[in-house]
Image (cartoon, rainbow, N blue to C red; front, side, top):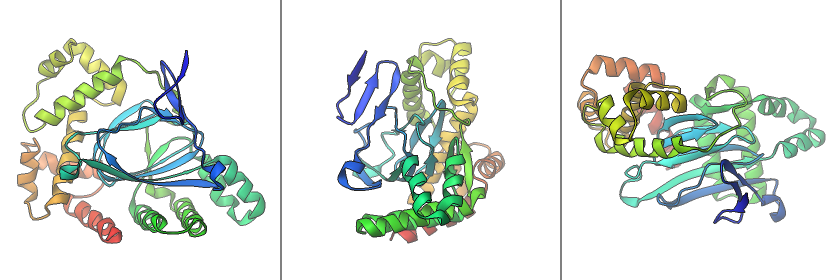
Length: 310
C-alpha cells in the first residue's frame, strides 16, 4: 500500500525507503542547497531521491545508514552519494550539546542537469563523466573536504548565480582529486529492505551511548535486545559488516573525536580512557587505522575546517 508521510515531499511504502520529491526546479533553480539547523528530535526517515547529494555534518554524530551499510558517523564528516541511494542519519541524543540542534549543509543535483550542462558547456564533460561514474557513497576527505567546506559556507549568503559558481567549483575540485574519496558500503547498493533490524540498531545505539565507558559484554547487550548471543552477533554483522567489538570501537572513537574537538586541552591518553579504551597502544593503532592519521594530526585537520567556518 502506498501512502504519503507527514512531509508532502515524501512518498512511502510500508517496507521500502521513502521516495523524496525535490521540487527545486519549480522554483527556477537547477539544484538545491540547504543549511539545516533543526532540533535533534526531528528525524528524517530512510529515503532516496534520483539526485546526487553532498552532505556535510556540522554538528552531531550517531549512526549513518547508506544503502545496506550501517556505521557510525562523526561530527564534521562529509559524504557524497549517487542518485537513488537510500540513506538517513540517526543522531545520538547527546551529540548536539546544549543547543539540542543538529546542523548540516546539503547540496542536491540531478544527473539530467549535469548531462544538459555538458551540451551547453562541453568543457564540463570530464567533470560530469567522473561524477556519473561514481556508483557508491564516499567520504570526502583531505584537501577536497577543506575546499567543499569553504564553498558550502559561501553558498549560504550568496545569490543564486554565485551559488551555482560555488557548486561547480566543488564538483570540479572533487573530480580532480579522486584519492580524497573513501568508499562507503558497496557499489550500486541502492536497495534496502525495511525490517526489525532497523529498530534493533536504534536500541543498540541507545545502549552503547549509555554504557560506552564501561566494559560491555556480548550476553548483556544481546539480552537487552531480546536476542541470543549468536543471533545478536549475526544481526550486527549483517547490518554493519562489522563485529560488535569493531562497531563499539567505532562509537568510542567518534566520541573521543567529539570530546577532543570540544576541549583540545585534554590529554589524549586520559580522554581515550574516558571513552572506554583501557589499552592506550591499541587505541593509538586503531585510531590511525580508522582515521588514517594520529589523534594529533586529526585535531589539526579539524581546526582547519573550524577556522574556515569562522
